[in-house]
Length: 314
Image (cartoon, rainbow, N blue to C red):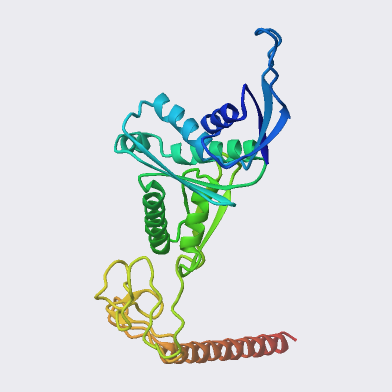
């Protein structure tokens, strides 16, 4: 309850003054002091009346908004205020304010905050105050939701998180609410007010193999695309020449890795292989044996001749 004191000569005059000041007829009158008539015009005193009423902030809000709009150069506008016991809704219609909102998108939220603080302090109770200009809030919600979806699609394709520009709590709630059911997308806030920002991130890795047990033909992608199954591995940059077993070629004959390999002919067109080597080794051994036998026979012959000569001397 609010009250004011009015002085007047009569009760009727006090009521008229209260109506003009309060802008309403809903108030109670209490006489504090009755007016007194003096003698010959001297000693006359006015009466005092206390007016008690329920504070309705509509009138004060309208006056306050008129001052704000005049300060920013608005002339043609219409103010509509609807209120009840718990809330106050304020709507302004003006084509002039569209241009102001384009350059100052925070104007509506700032005025709403100031009005809410002022009204609640003046009335001594809490009101939920909403302020809107030319349905700006509805347009702003649509713009923020469109931005959220566009950024979420980009993150889903690139798997790289996106950080939006700083927003107030109301705008951040719009983004979070729009993307809370978006598939494989998460949102969170970073930073401190008034520079708090929203981050939109992907919940899936950048390259994930599809989960399918029946897709037996799936090939893992690499930097050069899919690799065909029957493509031979290139050797020395030549994709038409198959790679030999040990990496070298002898007279266009690939050298196999086995024990039965025989070397080709040498420069004298004489074959040499493991079998020929064995025959040559056996021949050399036989020749050496014969030579040793001859040497032994010659030694025996010389010793015999030496013994015969010694006996003849005796």
